[in-house]
Image (cartoon, rainbow, N blue to C red; front, side, top):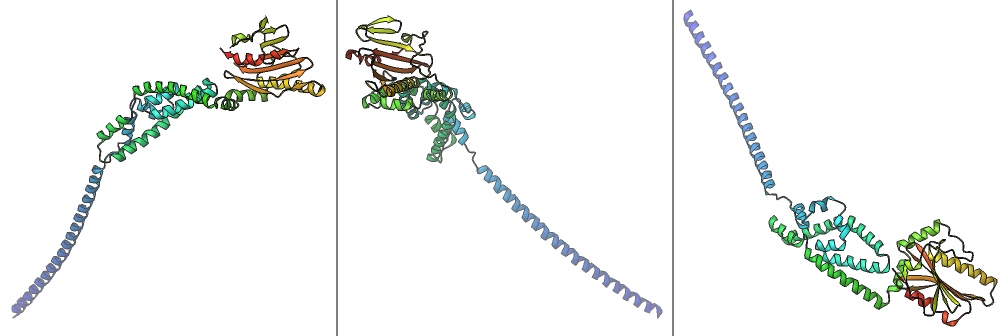
Length: 378
């Protein structure tokens, strides 16, 4: 009885225990399923992210592979040709310094070389050739490289736009054909310069604009600027009626000239006509500019005119241009006859020519102008 009861209780307990165990197993399985499901979801998410990342990475790699290197810098050097590293790496160019327009011809800049040659020819006619050459040389030395590089960049860009589908080798061929250097153009440039010089001289002389513009430009050239500076900073000696000559300077060492007929040489720089008219050709000691000397002599005679007005006349200062020399001077008429003074600047010296005509001989009056027209620099 008791055993039966006990057994029944045992069976109940076992059954109960088995049920509990089954319940626990069920709960465990459910938990495992949830964990597995969560793991599967996480794995899928990570896998998807990995695929997207790899796809994105591959896309960027493909974009990088598809990009072509920019050949512009290489094409610029191809266009320039010889010495491209020097031209792109320096601010000065010694070839341009010494050869000016001819270097432009060499670099296939023919039209620019012609333009520069014309400018040099015109300015050289009007003012000191050495000053023009110096200015042009310095400008070419420091200006050629940056300007030429700008020019080349525009030309290379135009070639690239005209041939968008061309390979680098094709673009290189176009650049080397259009740019680079040419010795034949230098030869053509030499003949062009000769023609420019001849045509410029003919036009200026024929049109009659040479003398007028030459005077205007000479008023502003470097020589006159320096002389103006000297005038403002250095006090010239006042003229007191006597000109001090520099006996160490001979007029004939600097000029060629022809004395009018009828004159005889009486000293190194003096000539006499019928023992009456006298021409003297000298260099002065006390003055550094011809216009200052003539101005002081003119003012001195003007003072005398105001004090002795009867039979006295002083002409205005005039400029006589002969053989690229501008003579500045005037005439004085008084009781002692006629006197003429004309001076010029040359090689940092002041040369003066004087005519004394005490008897007012008519045949002597124009002798000084005849003499001026024959004077040429050596």
